[in-house]
Length: 88
Image 1 (cartoon, rainbow, N blue to C red):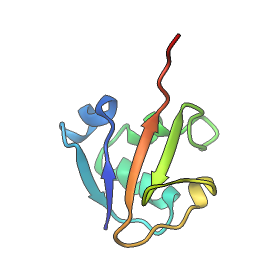
Image 2 (image 1 turned 60 degrees about the horizontal axis):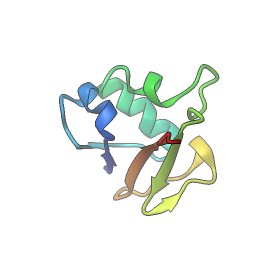
Image 3 (image 1 turned 45 degrees about the horizontal axis):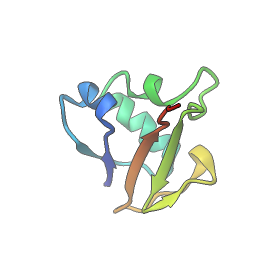
Image 4 (image 1 turned 180 degrees about the vertical axis):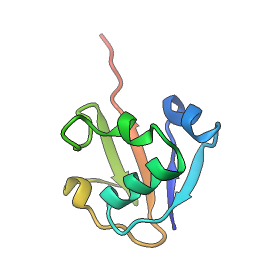
């Protein structure tokens, strides 16, 4: 199963876990499975149209995601959801 590194702002949904393992052949399936295991996760990651929120980037196996939710995952993939950091 893929390892998901949970950003600190979302750890309240995982009971404080910094990383969780979740199955999924694509990023969309992984998020669906995250939602099943940790309700509220999809709402935190996806916008109303079901796409990744504008302020969230995804790194899969150290590479930024270019295919959106269709990005294929390996059985041992590492996924990082990276929230945008505001500044001024």
